[in-house]
Every structure is written in C-alpha cells, then in structure tokens.
Amino acid sequence: MKNILVTGGAGFIGSAFVRHMVTTYPEYNFVCYDKLTYAGNIDNLLPVSDEENYRFERGDVADRASVRRVLQQYAIDTIVNFAAESHVDRSILDPDAFIHTDVVGVYILLDEGRKHGIGRFCQVSTDEVYGDIDEGLSLEDDRFLPNSPYAASKASGELMARAYCVTYGMDTVITRGSNTYGPYQYPEKLIPFFTTEAIDDRPLPLYGDGRQIRDWLYVDDHARGVDRVLHAGESGEAYNLAGENQRYNLEITRRILEILGKPQSLIRFVPDREGHDRRYAMSAAKARALGWRLTFDFEAGLEATINWYRENEWWWRKIKTGDYLDYYKHQYAERLESAQR
Ligand code: NAD
Ligand code: TDX
Image (cartoon, rainbow, N blue to C red; front, side, top):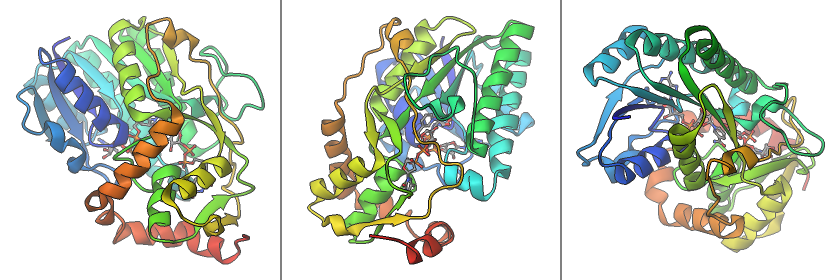
C-alpha cells in the first residue's frame, strides 16, 4: 500500500479517516477524490491541507473517465470508498442520487480499479443493510433486509464489491459501521442537527415516539476501524464496526438539552419517518478479533461533540443557509405544525 485514493474524503467520516491516515502513515500518499456535494466540505480537510502526502481532486465516482485519469495520474494501488449519499430522509424524498453514487459509483470504482490493476478495495458500508432487528445482534453473515432507498443502495454497492471479488478475484473488504457521531458531521443527522437547533432555542423534531434504538460510534473510532480492516481484514470479508452503545433517540435528545442547559420543552414529537427502522445493533466481535478497540465512551464523546459545535459556529452557521433551509422546510415545516410536546 502506497498510493491510496480516498473517495468521499471531504465528508464527515471520510475526512476523519483522511486526517487520521495522513498523519499516522507519512510513508503513504493520499489522494482525496470528492464531488463536493452539499455534504462535502473542504473545510473538513483544513487540518491536513498542507501535508506533503495529501492531494485533493474534485470529481464524481460515477464519472468513468475522471476516475480513470486519477487512478493513472497518481499510480493508485488502493481505494477506500466513503463516497455516498448518506441521509435516509433525503433518500425517501428522492432516491435518484443514491442510485447514482451508492450503486453506479461503486460499480465504476470497482470496474476502473480492476482494469487499472489496483490491490485492495475497501467499501465503507453500514449497519442499515441488515434492516431492523427486534433483539440480539446482527452478525456479518446475516441476510440483508434493507428498508430505505438509502439502505438498499448501500446493500447494492456491497453486493457489487462481493461479485468483483468472487468473479474477478479482486481484493475487496467491506466495513459496516453503526450510527456515527462527532465533529464535522453535516447538521442534518440527529446529533448535530439537534445540537445546532437547540443552541438557537429552536424545536427538536423527534420522529414518532422517540423510542427507536441506534448503536452509536464515535467518528475517530470508526476511522480507526476502517484503517484496521484495510490493513488486516481478510479478502472477501465484511466486518461490523459496532459502537456497542445502544440508545433511544429520546434519551440522546434529552441529554443534548441537558448538556447545553436548554429546556426539555424544546422536544416535539412529530409524524414518523416512513419505513422507520426501530432498532439497529451489531456484534463487533469479528472486527475486535483484528485488534480493533473502541476508545471513546459515549458520554465523553457526546460532550466533546456538543462542545465542538458550540465552539465552531464558523463551521456550521454558513451551512445552515440557502439550500439547507429549503430542505429543512420540506422535511420539517408540516411535521412541526402537527407536532406534540
Ligand atoms: P457524508 O454525507 O458526510 O459524506 C459523503 C461524502 O461523499 C461527501 O464529501 C460528498 O461530497 C461525497 N460524495 C457524494 N457523492 C459523490 C460522488 N458521486 N462522487 C464523489 N464524491 C461524492 O457521509 P458520511 O456520514 O461521512 O458517510 C461516509 C460513508 O460511511 C458513507 O458511505 C456512508 O454510507 C457510511 N456510513 C455512515 C454512517 C453515519 O452514521 N454517518 C454510518 C455507517 C456508514
Ligand atoms: O430530525 C430527526 N428526527 C429524528 O427523530 C432526525 C434527522 C433523525 N431522527 C431519528 C431517526 C433515527 O432513528 O434519529 C435517528 C438517527 O437518525 P439519522 O441521524 O438520520 O441516522 P440514521 O437514519 O439512523 O442513519 C445513520 O446511520 C447509518 C446515517 O445517517 C447513515 O448514513 C448510516 O449508514
């Protein structure tokens, strides 16, 4: 491994991975390839922008000619694919971009990667491919039952990676991370959305009864998990990167308000997300066997995250304008009108 292409590296988790890898492995070269969609943000990469082993290229993973050029220009031998449309609610409003990036984009990367003769291909995936589970923990060999267009698009991307491994002998590995939180997360996802809204004393639209369960993973632990699987994962295998920290959405919302010193009366119970999965939970045993360890406790991670948003308004205030406000209105205006306290 020497020349690593990190696709989607300007997003939330991809940028944490780039920041971690560029400083941890000065002997490798990194090229971040990102389309800079609404969720991509070059500010996320400021901490490494002057590093000698880091370059940025703007481009679409589904653009074959552009992918080919970058693979050749930088003699890429490894691809780590974070690029995705990643927000479930947006996939419900319009799945199109999800098929483009999470399905076609993965195929183009695999296909151009194979023709270029790359070594390892790491596809970053999600616990959502397993769908809703009532009890117990999802294991890597469990069947896929994706429920949202987002989850189905991620499952499709994984299946294509598997096929390229079996059919063409490509060296692929897959990571399935659980709900990730931390600094630099686009403020449409639960924790940064509610944190930034609460800072401004605005209502927090909790879907349904707020009793859905997610398993929360700190972003730096997620990044280190991808590093571990990239270096030590067995070809053709998938690894759950589970936070092993299940929480109700309502519990998290209450804690955000407590930490910020804001009233619980900001909570609004709004009409539920369509097809909303009640619970995700995975076993991390297989990734642990590779030597991956969680280093962040949820309570400390949540406080650090909330403090980061408190201290970095320069980062999120400019995001919460323009198209963001159109999305907010579309997603929440009617819901909030029929809200219950
Ligand atoms: P994000 O939305 O913050 O970032 C996605 C990045 O991909 C952005 O920089 C965007 O510009 C880029 N991108 C989108 N379409 C592209 C295209 N066609 N070509 C090139 N770049 C493109 O997402 P995230 O939360 O950082 O998630 C990263 C990966 O991890 C995704 O694959 C996601 O499915 C997966 N994942 C996320 C979570 C989570 O809780 N956020 C959990 C598990 C897995
Ligand atoms: O306004 C909201 N109100 C609310 O109740 C939002 C944005 C979310 N929620 C609920 C829905 C979920 O049960 O909070 C929970 C978390 O929601 P999201 O932050 O949208 O995440 P989720 O749908 O669980 O998906 C996330 O985890 C898996 C990421 O967005 C995916 O990219 C990842 O694959």
